[in-house]
Image (cartoon, rainbow over all chains, first blue to last red; front, side):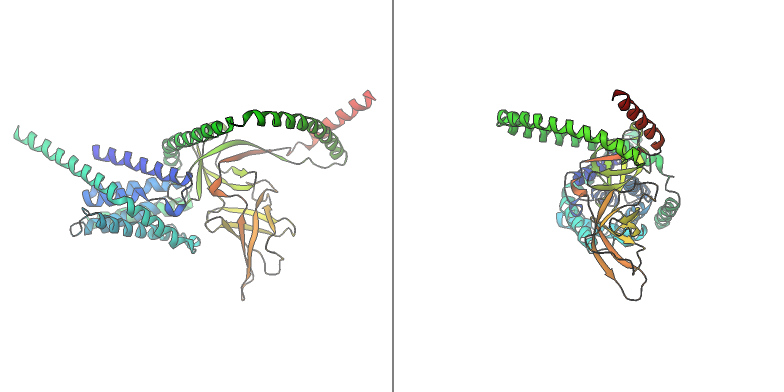
Length: 171
Length: 286
């Protein structure tokens, strides 16, 4: 429950920051997809039902914030989570470069899937790849810092829960 | 585990399909999210505005005395000019009434500050700090002195989400100002739109100004939308591709007007009565 609450807080904060950056004059291609960093963090720290549900919820938040179609972001976040969760046994995001590469690929995949789910074909102009890759690069640059914080925090919370469980069983 | 992912994916696809047919079904979560996120945007906007104001006030202090004098002189000049204009306006209204012409319609609305952009980074929606409690409703037109901005798609008590005309899911019934060629514009990303359903034979030239036709029941007639930036005629088709450059710079949008109605519409009889009264009074005075 505590984990879910923290995730919701992080997601709302990320959403607010993304919106503010756009308003402060940062071009669309340079707005980082902070919510997708959360999905990446979830797939490596919570590769289970909780993580998939949270990813779906994060996607829904993005959908609600755009107030047009509900579902495309939720779908793309679930697919990204699914791919990363399946690969999480073989991949490690402890190194900065790995985190950057994984986040970059996730942002590209999520944006392409969003366009497919949301039938955004009219938006597929020359500006589209520019924007997708721009967002992916900016997100990847920020990813090592944010991911290390999130994954460390998730592990600490899991350890605390295990410790509490052990103490209870000892009693 | 995999079946769970597939179930969630199916759920997302079903939601997409359902929301495409029933746009109003997610109104509550959208409104709730708006109420949570928009105050954060408003706070940052306030901080940004305050710092800008402090800076400009400080810089302005250095030449404030000279500027004050110059402004006073200009004010006196403008006041006399304004008095003359008021006289012209009254005279113009009376003459229009006599000629049975309707007065130029004025937009009634709520002015709002832009406090945030759509968080996905695709930048085709904006958040404004006026909502249902200020009289803003879903479907209302949003304009700027330079032209049409978009349409309200979600409203919470204090904030509203505006879909820009450059979004591919928005459509505005328009016509060209000179040749009166009608069509529907749809967004194609960035600050460009496409004018659809224009026949090949219809004369449309680069530079033509495009205004709202008022036929869609959302945007009042005569608001500038943009100008034609490209005309392409493809062989084997009946229609031509017309690209429009929006007259509003959406990146620099700070304030907008949410149109709640048009003053002067449906009041021609009352207007005529008033004018007759004014005329009678003037005759009595004479």
